[in-house]
Image (cartoon, rainbow, N blue to C red; front, side):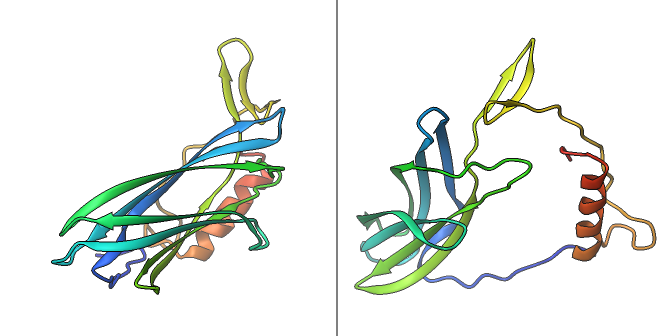
Length: 181
C-alpha cells in the first residue's frame, strides 16, 4: 500500500519539470561570496512555439530579495529545454550544522505577461572540503562526522511513519550528538 505522502500535480502546458530546478554553488570563504549556477528544465507541451519570460529571484531567510535575473526564452513545440543562469551573491550567510541558513530560489514563468507558475527551491550555501590526513571540513572548520544507520520503521507504527515520528526521531538523534543520517 501507499505509506508515504502522495501528490497529484496539475500543470499548465508550459511548466517547470518536477524536480527540474537545480542550484549549485561555489563559495569563496575569504570574500564571503558565492557563485550560483541555476539550471531550470522547462516543458512546452503545446502545439505552438512559445516565448516566455523566466524570472529567477533569490530570497534570504526573511524572504527579502537579494538577487534576481530575468531572461526571455523561446520554447520549441512539444519539447523540454534546460536553461542555465549564473549569478553572484556577496555578504552571504553560510549553512552549517549549528545555523542551517536556507536561501530560496523563486522561479517564475510568464507568458504574454501572465504568471503561469511560481516554484520555490530551497538551498544552502556552504564550503565542503575533504582531506585524507585531516578529515572533513565544513566552511573551513573541522567537523567529525558522527552518523547512524537508521531503519525505515519505528516501534508501534511499522513503516507508515507519520511526520511527527520522524521529527521526534531527528530531535532525539541531534541530542545524542548525531550529525549524519
